[in-house]
Amino acid sequence: MSGSKVRDPSLAGEGRLKIEWAERHMPVLMLLRSRYAQSKPLAGLRISAALHVTKETAVLVRTLRDWGATLFLVPSNPLSTQDDVAAALAEEGITVEAWRGMSEQEYFSAIRDAARQAPDIVIDDGADLHVTIHEEMPEVGKRVIGGNEETTTGIIRLRAMESAGKLLYPIIAVNNALTKYLFDNRYGTGQSSIDGILRATNVLLAGKRVVVAGYGWVGRGIANRARGMGARVIVTEVDPIRALEAVMDGFDVMSMEEAAKVGDVFITATGDRDVITKEHMMLMKDGAILANAGHFNVEVSVSDLESIAVSKREIRPNTVEYTLPNGRKLYLLAEGRLINLVAAEGHPSEVMDMSFANQALAVLYHVNNRGKLRPGVYEVPREQDEEVARLKLETMGIHIDRLSPAQEEYLRSWR
Image 1: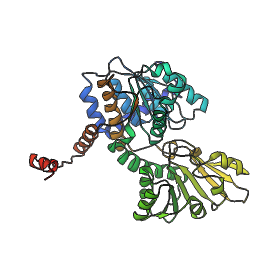
Image 2: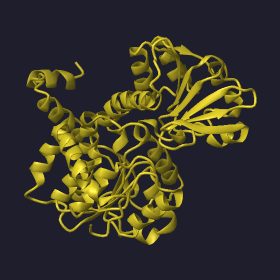
Image 3: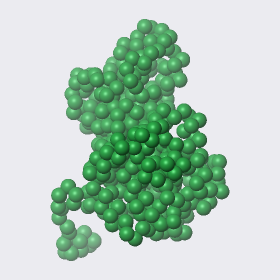
Image 4: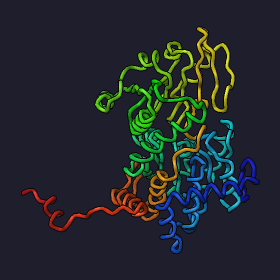
């Protein structure tokens, strides 16, 4: 198993079937894999990746391996690993240190092990690996060619590091690619978050008041999917422009204090901490459901919930019932962690096809521009974004128009 640490190697067969299913639904990444499989542009390079160890991630990892890279894969969340997929990758010779239900100590031990590989490229989802390298192993960071970041939360952390002058290598904000956040964040998280809530609870959304905290692309996706299932959706926001947009999109908008009194299901999607606190919890109706779609488990204050509850019990898988002093019961899903990955399978493969195509191409961009990029956070090149979109359309059998030379000249002219 090439030094891998997985829960059960015997699950590899099941994992291979899952990966094959994902590959069938990720045609863009498969096209890119075949394009560079012979030239192997990553030959001799080491890649450390902290990503959700799912079947879609496996397609990316296999692609980078077929391009010549040596990989070390660890999770970006203690509860998101698919153990059968981890076993399948380990059986193929890819070093994996991941299993579902890692303790915090085990999780960060794996992150440190990934950093100790002295990687040439670092791929991250949430920036725990980037931050660990910078804080604990700066000598490793000084030799890194470049890194990628998959999430909004991670980019917030990395831009803060950039502003403080702490970044040691260039990082491409893969999350900011149009073919990532317009589809992955909106349609992927929107659908998979609802999927996770339904798997954990099996409640009927039609007619319920669903409160969505945050109206970024993730919040937009969740709000629209919930409305499509018949829910009456309330949006909470701190940004007046986004709040106004939510109003114009037809949603009720109010403060969390107001929403806490009437909501049936609460879903946080802000990237910030303490979005739902004990003050809100004490206002909630009996039976309210709490879920989080943000990267870290800080949006719903679990510590507040633990402090005010008089008792708790797991009533269903990924559903814990908390009884409050007032006798009301609240239901926390997935420990307040990513609902779509803990209680479901994460994003559908079709949207991860574009996200991971961007990841793979961003790795090539680092390699092709080695030594030319100063430490900092960079956007995905526009031409890469457009190439991913074109390839996706082609695999869907969709053809679009192109500008004629006269049209291009007209758009360039000021007359």
